[in-house]
Amino acid sequence: PEVATALAALLNTPAVDLAPGSTPVLPLTRLQQALGPRAPRLFMKRDDLLPFGLGGNKVRKLEYLLNPHSSHTVRRFATFGTVGSNHALATAIYARELGFDCTCFLAHQAKVPTIAPALRTHARLGTEMVHYGGDYPARIKTLREHLWDRDAWVIPIGGSSWIGTLGFVNAGLELATQISAGEIPLPARIYVATGTMGTAAGLALGLALAGLRSEVQAIRVSDTAISNEQVLQRLMRKTALMMHRLDRSIPADLEQRSRIQLRHSWFAGGYARSDARTLDAIRMAADQLDLTLESTYTGKAMAALLDDAAEAGADNECLFWNTWNSAELPLAQGHDADLSAIPREFQSYLE
Image (tube, rainbow, N blue to C red; front, side, top):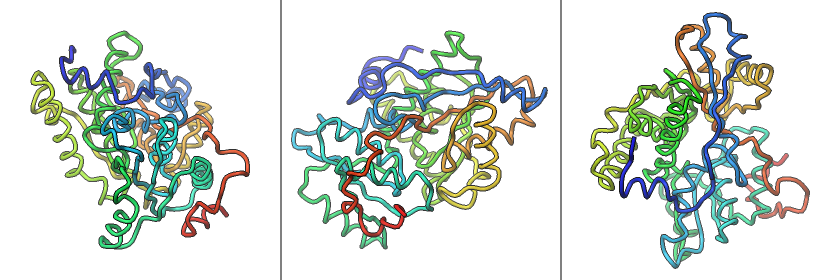
């Protein structure tokens, strides 16, 4: 569709240009054949190939959130995540590229192999890493100590504000263009991992704006305190409302026209934890697609697709949206990072 005036200007002119061009969509023929004659036609959206430092879904949100022109006094970006958070790491990488300092408020998580390289990269980048935990008064005290009078531009956890969500509204329109061009048939279902839900929310809104009936299968990977139906609806409603205010041609009830289902069966007991289904999906992706997935996000989304494939039927098409980063971490190699900059609470992740 033709998206007009102020919204088009916002979607087409992000604060910073981190992800030029669109990412490819590819058929997953080998995997489809391995699943048998009743399997649906399978495709993949390769957001893991997004360029510039660190790929994956974080880039699309940060294009709109890293706004160096928000105030002439901004000198620092600040955000939140776990010690292995790709969002926190991507924010730190791009903040440095733009010439800003960065503070990351980090919480503990289950130990996985990607944490140590992430912390070392933070140390090399000069990220101010702050242990973030405790009760509410303790967290408020931490924020005051590290943000007060520092000219910081604060980005929410996962980048999932209405502004960050616009990055995936744009992604939904990008997919609609690829469908219109015949690069891929209209998928009945789109499988994507969801943590703070901005990716899934924006994608569903973008597809609805394009008039497409694909249903987003949002595979929950975070605790229900973060990922739940009520929070998802509020985020989608707020994003749709703000788009409508920017452009009155955007339906005010766009959130109600969206097709999305938040699914909980592949949580595997916790954030960054995995079970046999997750690990089997990761192995199958490696064997059939030569594709590397991880156990926190994309392995769980792939497990959901594979579990559903047996019942989907050959007449349907399903799309796996790969949100992970396939590039090497910049500055992750070598031993000259100042590891003393890593808070003592996180030193055990390096062992």
